[in-house]
Length: 393
Ligand code: ATP
Image (cartoon, rainbow, N blue to C red; front, side):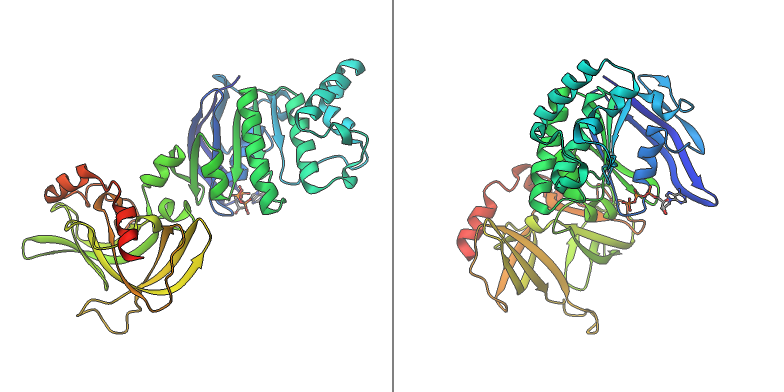
């Protein structure tokens, strides 16, 4: 049982500052995922918690006790590495029980603990084998079994699934999450895979360039990204980002791009901006008057069975520079749709599903709310998608 607190952690390697002002509290039993692109400082943050790197400044606490200067071995944390770090000359049983033998536990107790962990991970038939005689998935289970026999205060996972194929990754992430829930052990998990983050985390921490960009539950981050970066990083296919400008003219404030205009809250600051639209928010059909309306020419269709991804090209508005490329968007439609390249369809997006980001990339939270459309927002979009699909497909 453990709470973890990173307080104002910074880390530099020479001149290179790789983690900046990292502040994060992890509650007891929570599963927190650090996610972000390669090199953003995830592993370094995890290694500082493990005691494998020392912070340049800041403090780390476990159960409200400062552990910043406590050696790694004394931290009661168990790490599962991307490489699994199994000892090649030892059997699976000896690998799993290694930490217990270092603690000089009686051999019989070690055997019992190892067997219990191996049964839990369904690798009890492999105990006599050497790591080289195991598949990637089996090695990953041995590494997890080795972590759980230690009954640590917290699990630290560093991309433990990245060496597995896609199908195995799916089952392994479900297994890890179930195991962590059964044991109730606090966990910090590093990945660059946004699907792992979305499906496993109680809370996600999105990092970029050594900084935390946003912390929240998967749905909070998905529905309310605070920046273009977070909106683009979470979700596959990613958020459609339309570059444009907030223009104040003739008593109105509008987002204007080559392909669309959108009325905004009157206090929205002028300047470059980006409109974000999730692929599933693009709904076929005309929608209500207050919805953003678009005409999309179908460019490419990917039928995935349960859903269809449609690449659309949105026509330029009259007056837009001819050299500007057409706006390309991806729509995600539930079910199967008989669309072919060249079809032209109306699409709409409910205002509450639009996100506007300013020139610094941060969300302009109130820009989309206009008094005129408050009633529309309250009504929500209900069964609009099903109605529109039925009408147009
Ligand atoms: P990935 O997903 O690729 O593992 P990451 O987000 O985990 O990336 P880190 O491994 O934390 O990133 O690395 C952050 C930065 O720190 C990188 O630029 C990396 O090159 C640098 N770095 C990491 N360890 C060291 C080290 N021991 N010495 C010097 N630079 C390092």
